[in-house]
Image 1 (cartoon, rainbow, N blue to C red):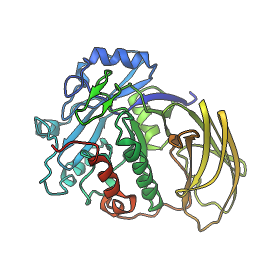
Image 2: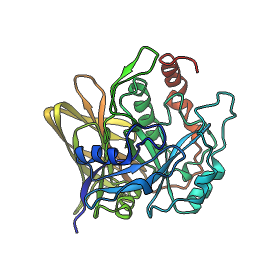
Image 3: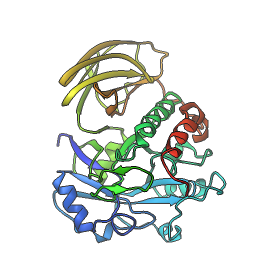
Length: 362
């Protein structure tokens, strides 16, 4: 069976934590958005058994582990509730500003050893940013680069997370980037700090996964292989040609000593700019209304190690509205990468300052 792009959402809540919809109501919302799959990730709560299974919709079992040091999703391919769920704090911590940094290592090691997948959520978003500098990126299979667009802070925090992930990739990480709506309510919310934010929409941003079957196993096999792109609307096609071979999103070309032909097209409703990004630097771009196509020959030497992805911007606002996971080339060196090594480089203090200015004291 040929693989196809499945539409999904990896981060959502129901009334079993701090959402407003019942599982049945959330399922109806996901069906209206024509999703193929979603993950249910209530705070420190295993809600999966509350859902009625549907033949055309894959429901992925998960939990948003919510701790003082930050939030991370954990996904279970088989749907079975892990025994450590009962050890998570209830009620979950909102955030203790006096809590010391760190604390994720033991639980993340248990999760990794059990074969479950984990994803750090909204790592730059105050007051829920990731606060454990000792976290090993070897324990982070996925990272939620694009979170809930209704947060005004995410105008800065999402691009900052994208930049941080780019630095991970440059350092040798192969973590897959995901998106998540962080759905709580479809209704507008007055935050009490001068902002009235629009209601959440299931599947916005939307994460596309190139999978052979619409099953948890097939979806996670594809996500592990980084066959993923994230979008606020536009679709993306990416092909990298090398001799008689063609590579796509997430592929590893191995050692290359040649020119490769990068071909990409983004299709959407506004005037778009498609950018070819190599190792975090835009090397070419093209604009178009409704679609933007680009071709570019990229020279790669045998000693080069790096990656190529496509970013898409809305030309009027300049904001990124879609991006792919990369195509890799060269070797993949083993390094002990720690989260704290990347915080200062990504302007974490600037991002947090921007966010703090938009929230009242707690």
